[in-house]
Image (cartoon, rainbow, N blue to C red):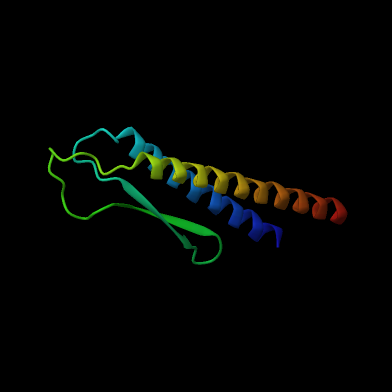
Length: 108
């Protein structure tokens, strides 16, 4: 049980860190003309945990003269959510590590 908890927590940390990187990229390019922001879509992993798919918003090519489609309010909310998700998954990993350590100490 603890090993799967470690795996799930780690996959959640990786997914949230990837989504947070995407949000940071969107904010960094907010004033870039023609920039299409990236969108993070979380999905349940095939075995356990979670994965994230990053895609560009709007599939059509943007003209260089059009302003960025980045909404800073949305990106701020997303970054807060992704950071909270990362911290929660880090706590899962920490707790699973403690449980696994206790089990190993009992076994030894």
